[in-house]
Image (cartoon, rainbow, N blue to C red; front, side, top):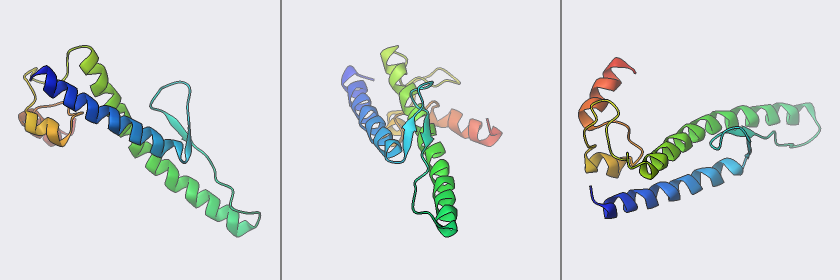
Length: 124
């Protein structure tokens, strides 16, 4: 993989990181402990018991979305860290180069195509 290829993936990852952080910031506050961790805020709708129920439902929904976005943000940040360590695009299982077509689909991939199949079958 060329430096130009790595730069292309880095740019995509940085753009995705910014987008994820913006999405999370729209309904959650960054937790100071880990850079990818956010805490959903309860949105106040009104004062009635019905409003309280709606607020709780919205919070539960936001927490589910938050979890998914945080997981992806963590993956993206790990991929960016690998770029900085010159370890990007190397399969964590077999240590071979991850196929470029796999990185095109998901630049935060940890495994090559062969190892992805094995890992997904084993449920690792």
